[in-house]
Structure formats: structure tokens, C-alpha cells
Amino acid sequence: MVEYNTIVIGSGIAGMSACIYLRRAGIKTLVIEGDVIGGQLNKISMIENYPGYVEVSGSDLMMNIFNQVSSYDTDYLYESVNRVDLDKRVVFTDSGKYRYKYLVIATGRRNRLLGLDKEEEFIGKGISFCASCDGNLYKNRDVVVVGGANSAVSEALYLAGICKRVYLVYRKGELRGEDILCKRLSSKDNVEVIYNSNVVKYITDNEVVKGVELDSGKVINCECVFLAIGYIPNGELFDVDKKDGYIIVDNNFMTSVRDVYACGDIVYKNVYQLSTAVGDAVNVASAIIRDNGVRE
Image (cartoon, rainbow, N blue to C red; front, side, top):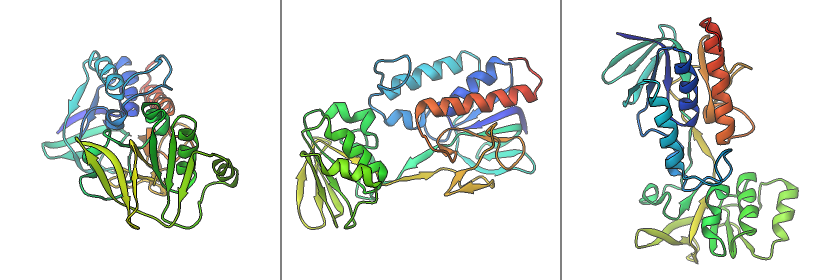
């Protein structure tokens, strides 16, 4: 059984940021990633709100971070985690068992999809989950937002300021967003809310989304569909305290199990942004570094 001081599960911006600090402190660290390095960063076409960059693609930012982590001679394991024994401090993958002293959970969350045919294939090709990230790509064009809670209303408000027309499609007869947000939305001349409707099909052309079909038979031509129907946290493997599936942490980002930490979008918190994920990771790494008696 291979032993590490710290195992980081997940290689999104939170996991990689924690690793940078840990490796700089000389702490033996293993990063385990079952998908692709960078996580959700790979699905963001353009980022314009991350300090230090006027604009940068998610994949480019991911590669910069990956190169920085790699420069510290970090160990990687490209496999899915099958099981974690928090009592014995062992992570199980297909290739074997890995023992840790500290565990960092940075598995993030995944966007909830509509469940339509070939939907995942069109993410980044006319399907987006972030108006502030991708909205400017569709300036002066028609777009669709799906959802009816605060996130969907906020996305529609943002897009109304840059897009030609915004269609907000919601499956119920009344929006669930805050009253002040809904009032702002109703004042927008270029926003049309379509109630009691569901998107049942993506209309595509040349491998990009060009519109949607509703269950009423109505077709809406658009350049992008922004899905704002919630998230699913990737925390099923971890037997720690949670709320709504998100992991609860203390001020040092330790979970209910000693020496098991969590950071990034898997954590139950108020703000989910790249910069807050990095902040979480710095807190986690600093706590582990202090516990190892290493001077920062």
C-alpha cells in the first residue's frame, strides 16, 4: 500500500490550488482524478472575472495551473475513486489502495441537465451554465434561459443587458426568484417569460445548438441555451456531515471527520466562484501545513 501525507481527490481549481501550497511546503501529495484535469474549468469557454486576466479560456487557465502544480513534482493518479475508508484512512481505486494522513475532498459539483438526447455533447456548443462566463459570446443575439429560481432569473437579467432577446422557459406558472429580481426582470422589454413549459428537444445544425422545441410544440430559435436548473454535488462517496448533499466544514474547512478537509464547490457555502474555490483551498492547505509543523 502506497502512503502519502495528503491525498487530494479532484483536480479542479480548488484541488490544484491546495496542491500548489502543499507541495511548496514539501508535503508529499497525491492528486487523484477520474475524469480530466481541470474539472469544470474545461467547460468554460471564456473567463473575464478572474484576477490577473482580462479574459482567459477555462482550458488555458487550467493548463497554466496544471503546469504550475507539475513543476513541484506532484504525483498524479488518473483513476476513479471506488471507495474511501475514513476510519482506516485509505482510498481505493482500480489499481490499488492509497493511505493518507490528511484527505482533501475537492470533487466539486456537476450541473443538472435536462436529460435530453446527446445533451452533454453540446455543452460548450450552444449549451452553457454560466451567463457571466459565456454571455458576451452571444452579444446582440437571441438566447434561452431554462429555470425559474434566483439563479435563472439572475442569469436572464444579466443576459438582457447584452443579448438581443432573452427567452426564460420555466416549467411552473410562477417564478421562484426573489421579488425584487422578478420585478427587475418584468421591466426588461427584451425578456419573454414562457411559463408552464419544458424544453423537450435541442435543435442543432453543424454540431451547434440553434434552438429549442417546447412541449407545446413551440420552437424558439436561439444561439445558446443557458441551463440554470441547479447542481448535484459530487459527495456521494464521503460519509461526513452534509446539507443538501454539500459537505459542511468548519472555519479551517475540516469536515466532521478529523483530518478530512473539503474545498471548492463541494462545500456548503453562499458563493460559488473560481476565486472563492481558491480561497477555500488556501485555508485547507494552510491548516494541513500548520498541523505538519511546517512554517509557511
